[in-house]
Every structure is written in C-alpha cells, then in structure tokens.
Length: 316
Image 1 (cartoon, one colour):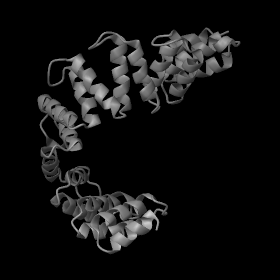
Image 2 (cartoon, helix red, strand yellow; image 1 turned 120 degrees about the vertical axis):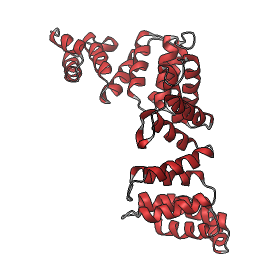
Image 3 (cartoon, helix red, strand yellow; image 1 turned 180 degrees about the vertical axis):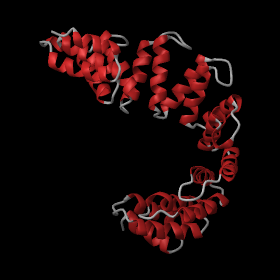
C-alpha cells in the first residue's frame, strides 16, 4: 500500500489525525495525489467534527481565500470553531478579517478583542498587530510608543521575525525607549536567521558601520549575501559595493557588476548609477560600454539621482 492508501484507510476508520493529513495532502498536492480542494474540504470537515482545531482553521482560510466565491461569514464560523478548540492563529484570523473588513463589515472593537485574546496566548502575529496599532494609532487605538515597543518585544520573545525587525527599528530610532543599537543588532540578527531579508540588510548596514558593535565587513557581507538570496535591492547594492572594493573578501568585479545589475533591475537608483560607472570604465578589462552606461545613467536620472544626471552629460 502507498502512504496515501494507508492514510485513506485510517481516515475512513475515523482516525482524526489521518483525516487531517489526508486533507493536507489533497490541499497541497502531496504524497503523489493531485491537488483536489473538494477532497481537502471533505477531510478537513471530518477532522474538524472530531475536534481537530487546525482542520477548522484550514477550512476558514479556504473559505476566505481559496474558493472561487469566497465566503467570509463561513470562514469566520470555522475560525471561531478553531479558536474555541484553542487555536490562537484562528483567533488572530478572526481579528484580522474584522479589522480589514474582508467580506464582512469592519468591526474594529471586536477585532481588537480577538487580537488581545491571541496576544495573551503569546501568538507573535497578534502581538505585532497590537504593536503596529499602538505605534500608528490605527484602528482607533491611542498612539503609545512605549506600548508598541513592549508588544514588539513580546512578539520577538515569541520568535516572530517581523516583531523582531520592528522592535529593532524602534530601538534604533529611540521610539518607546532610549536608543540601543547593540540590542537592535541582536534582534535583527535573530530575524535574519528566520529569513527576514530587510532585517538581514539592516543588520549588515549596522555591522559595516560599526553601530552597536565593532565594524565587521566580513559579517556584514554575509548578511547582505543572505538578503540578496531573496533579491532584496539594498542588500544587492551593498553586496556589490563590498565586492567592488574588496571589503569582507577579495575584489570581485564580476560579482559586483552582477549584484548592481540585479539591484538596478529592481529599481535601486544607486545601483543603477554604480552599474553605469562600471560600464563607462570598461568592466573586467573590456572596452567601455558607453551605450549601456548612458541607459543606466538615464534611468537613474529619471528617478531623481542627481549624480547620474551630471555623469550622463559628461559621457563622450
């Protein structure tokens, strides 16, 4: 018997965990079966009837986001069932649906209640949401920088990467507490380790400048390379600069040009300018590419890059 046959047999015998796993396989197209949303819903429903909280959560998400005709009311009913079974993400999803008015009338007061319920359980996204509301005054909440910082801190302690990033930003800006670059760098590196590209980029900038630490070009380059894997434009540009100048490693003109080009193609003006400069000089021992340089100078100038506009006028 295949794994899907084994799961099916167990699911048909009423095994709730097997029903959930079988639903998940049909939902995502795993274990050799084609994606089949109708079968996924069938087995999620069966598991939910058996008290499986994650199945009820998945049914809510499907009704909200994946059906040809979304049904927010039905989604909320499934979220509420999941939340009653102790699923904190479901409580957060209720809050977010009501906060955004996704297919239902906005209800900020009730949304806040659900966010608070999820946050009290230590659910990172809910803590982050409360932090953003306190920071911006959104949702009718009174602005309170200290409360925002505390929510981000608690979200960070729960391992939520976006909370770690925003906690670090507050510490860098002195929002809600005195500026603390060393603590900010710790939080950014924690978020970067979870794949947060902006956190890795900002950590690299701090490491390169020696803010909150001794300057460390090698560690900075590692952060930029990590963020560049997710095509983060500023990280690509900073990585190109380090490659071009031989900081954090040997000079790598080809790597620099490729990094600048990737950042430039994503709209980074300084990268357009840097790429144009390399092309105008003649990269990698090749003759100058004045046409290519002119194109990138012009594009950067159109974006408001003053040095690019000046350099374009000086091309032969």
